[in-house]
Every structure is written in C-alpha cells, then in structure tokens.
Length: 149
Image 1: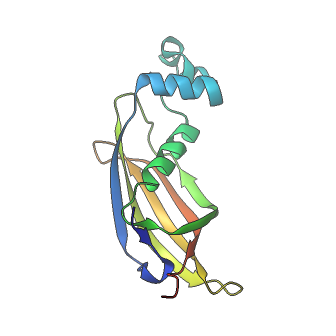
Image 2: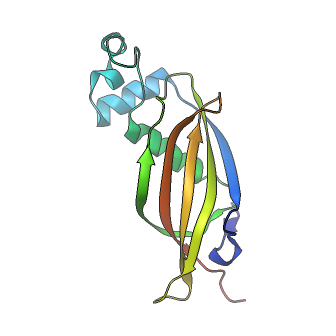
C-alpha cells in the first residue's frame, strides 16, 4: 500500500474505499462475543426491538470502519490514533448491507514537539449500498512526515 505522508495531505482532500459486505453470521458472532444485547445476538428476539430485526452493534460498525480505513489507497502514514471528537450512528447496519468509507481531511498542523510528524483531523463517513450514512465520526491522527531523502 502507498502511504500518504503528512506533507502530502491536502485540507479538503477526500478519499474513498469500499465495499464491505455485512453478513448475519458476522453480526451474531460479533454480538455474542462483544455486545450481548438480543438485537445483536438473537434474530427472533431482535424482531421485537425498535429496529424490527437483527442489527450490527456500533462497536462492530466502528471495527468495519477501521478495516476499510486500512485499505485506503493511499492511506495516511499513521503513527497513532489520537482519539475521536464525535461519532454518530444515524442509521442501523443490517445483514446484507454493503458498506463503503469516505474520508475528508479537515485540518492539519505540524507537531510542535516532534517536527517529523503532524496531527490530522479527518471526517469519516460510512455509507450503505443506498448511499445512506450509517456512521460518521471525526478522528484525530498522528501522521508521519515524509522522511528526508
């Protein structure tokens, strides 16, 4: 994979990657292991939930976002994730959904203490096959500058 160094990131620039197919089996397995609410672990019980059927947990969707982000081409030359400023889940993710990731680089600044890296804020939007957002978040990343030749 090609790396996108701090110096090469353009504020306002965008990138996209997809797609990821969500299966019922995956929703059940993730739910049973990490988020044991019936709407993630039991299709029959989920039919009585506010969603009317089985849905992926927010943690599961975040993991899919991470998987997709690791496949951006080029992808930021990540040193470390520094946190999230916001995260919204405007629509549920269901079995059969096909998810894609769009990112927009919002802001960047060179580190004051380490001149070989910078801080980048980026908006991540995961959409389903109908183009509906299912997760939006703003992340802060520490990204490496291009090494001197």
